[in-house]
Amino acid sequence: MDGLRLGVLASGRGSDLQSLLDAHGAGRIRSRVGVVVSDKADARALLRAREHDVPAEAIVPDATLLGADRRRHHEERVAKILAHYKVDLVVLAGYMRLLSPDFVGRFPNKIVNIHPALLPSFPGLHGQKQALDWGVRIAGCTTHFVDERTDHGPVLLQAAVAVDIGETEDSLSRRILELEHQILPRTIHLLEQGRVRVEGRRALVDPDESWTRRFPVIAGALYGQGY
Ligand code: GRF
Image (cartoon, rainbow, N blue to C red):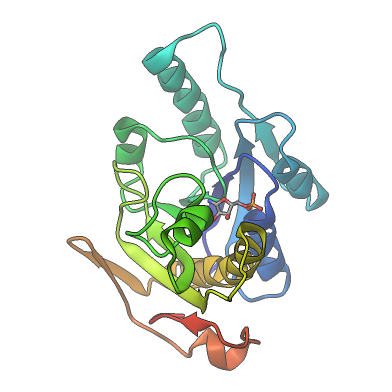
């Protein structure tokens, strides 16, 4: 099996994208990034893609259009690119735009998002800060299928760390990001092997040998079922 052709949507730095490029380079996943699309022309994610000879397209929303029209027009263009590159799975890797139900409906259980909090807690922006402000003792990240509601679809994988005394938003974000770079490629690995089945709002994983046995783990981190 050749793996999946991934279409990655990213708005910024692109370190989650990088984790996929690296995992493919290291032979941990067979799936490869077929195209990266950004809504920001200066996103570092685009540079990372080009450095790996991956097609990278900036599709910036048309400022002359308003509201729903702008979104429809923008999503139309993004969908065209994804179709052009024959993408099997869309990965939202720091994509700072909400997708319309219409767009999501075109890719049922074919869009994966990574979120820097343990969903369903702290959806939306700045999940790490929300968690700290709430005073939680455990924090982490989640990969999930995307449905019509923000950060809501079936959970795929989660990993967690204990919040340290004196933890700052920066330190916690850094620690969670390390976990993100592990669970995102592993999520793709499970999907490319057809090990995930969705029943209602639950994604059931038929596990193979755990990555905690095959690859280095972060001391003190908790890797949820499936990893
Ligand atoms: C990550 O924390 C991810 O969970 C969130 O946005 C951030 C993206 O980081 N959705 P990067 O652009 O991939 O470095």
